[in-house]
Image (cartoon, rainbow, N blue to C red; front, side):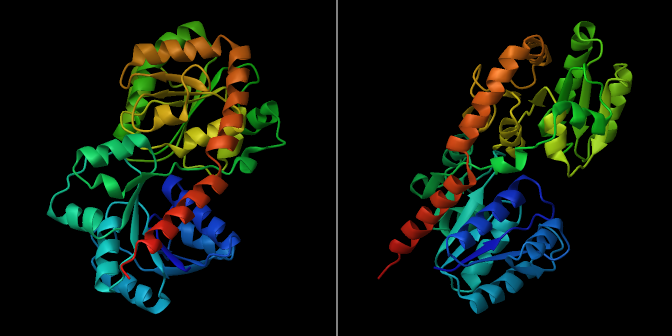
Length: 367
C-alpha cells in the first residue's frame, strides 16, 4: 500500500503536527507515505530535516486553483493507493478536485474543526461525494458533519494524538520558571493557541480581576499570534492587568511553558479537538476548558481537569480558583491525565486506526 497526504498548513501547529505524526507512523510500519505540502513552510522544512518523503508545492492560499493541477499531476506520477486530504480550508475542496481530475478513486478527508458547514453543491461534492471516508477527530465534529447532511456511513472518528515522550522533560518546574522569568511561588496559567476570537481569550481576561483579588501574584502567559492580539492587549490595559498578563507570541518551547505552569486554560467558544490539551495532559498538568466540540472527550471533568460552559467568565474563574487552591488535587489530575494520554491518545493508536481505515477503503473497491 502506498499513501499520499496533502497538508496545506505551513506551521507546525495542531493539524500539521498530526499529519507529520501520521506520516512518520506509516513509514515506521512499512507503509510508504508521500507528504505534499507548501514548499515555504515549517512543515516542509521539518519533514525534509527528518528524512520524510516530502514534495513541496507553491501554494498561494485557500483559493489557489493551480493546486488542483499541481496535485493532480503528483497523484498521477506517484500512483498512491490512498489519497488522504488533511483538514484546512481549501485543501479539502482543491485536493478532492485534484484527485477527481487525476482519476483517483480512493480519497479520504480529515475534518479537524467544528465550524458550521453546509452540505451544499460544492461541499457536498468535494467532501461528501468524492471521498470514500470522512475522518472526524472528535465525536463533536462528527455530530456537526452529520447534522449538516454529510453521509453518516462515511464518517468515522479517529481522535488526534500526542507524542507523550516529547513532554517527559528532565527539566524541573522551577528551572522552567527560571528560564521564563516567573517567580517560583507565583500561580501560573498558560493559554496556548492562535489569537482568534473563537479561542475565547477575552473570557479568561474578564475572569482575571476576581482571581487577582485572591492570588495577588498570579501570572498568565498567552502564547500564540493572531488577528485579535491588539484587541486583547487593549482589554488587558483596560482591566489593569498589565503586570499580570504576558503576550509571548509564537513559541517553539511549548514543553518548557507547560512544565512551568500550574494549569492550562483553554476557554474556547468553538473547538474541534485542541491538541494543546493533550500536550498539557502529557506534561502532567490539569486543563480547565469549555464544553465545546471535542474538549469534553479529551478532558474528563473533575478527573483530568474541569469543564465549564463557554463564554462564562464567572464560572471559569471559579474553576481556576478551585484548582489553584488545591495543589494536591492538581497533582492527582495531572498524573491521571498522563495515564489517559498514553492509553487513549497515543500516536500509535491514531496511526493504527488510520491504517485500518485505509485497508477498509481498499477492500471496498469495486471489483
